[in-house]
Image 1: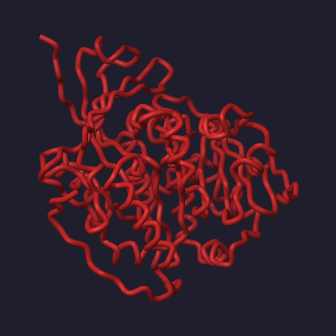
Image 2: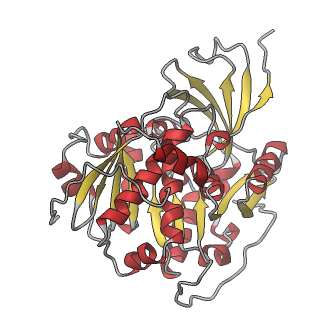
Length: 393
């Protein structure tokens, strides 16, 4: 389900470009529960709108999830299992984990928006159009006339995992400023979702922090998927420090097993005690650990457990983690009971949580059965269908 989170940026629908060298209503699979108690820049085209700081109220049909961060072009070899230098050609595809999450939510019938910056170039406008075509509100996007849209060349290995070469020195996404933020859009959100790539360099880092502050003051749930991309950081230590610098502000955090090992400097990612003592914090409501096709683990202040993955034949793990996150956040934004429980800083209904995570696992499972992220992101009907006849791992 989340092997996509272990390596680089997410991809979406593919367009040929050759670069030659010459629920149903009840879930019946929630079996493996553990109820153990744990005490444990410049030149933006658009200027944003100012907002009041009134307290957010839960309103019917107000299910917006705002996703913040990077949006780029991935160039993927037309032949899998080869190095970049050996690739006979490439296909271009929209990439960026936060954007994939936004599309995933919309594909499921939810309401989502994206905030970020691209270049005032053909790729930037192509990406904006893709979001719009997928029913994502792109009004929070900004276009920079002094920098290009970010590019990444991605190697798809024989096992479906990826390796990356990035071109962003700097790219437009790195130049997002606080003045670029559509704070009114953030204020409308129930959930504000983000990663860590936008923390790497200024001025985007300051814009990221300002967006989080705006969301927190507006009463949003803060959702964090670090989405570790070591090649983009100056060093491993800088990555660890940067990712952890905002750790204690999130209400929901999703990490992969590899990210646990990295953030804890080598400790056992499968040890519940390591997770609770090293990564769980007092402000956190829900910590999720994704395990690829094996499913996920969940941790709250009061209980923890595991939800099995769905057995499928994986073709491409791109976007699986984003599909998982999108599936879960869509349920949380749409369910008033789950939503209100976060505002009271507790989550009491373990069965409801497990059902939501099983649905999220189904989203990830479907996504790995096709190439690319955006084309493979599922509808709600497709997820319910796979869960109806699923065999768990």
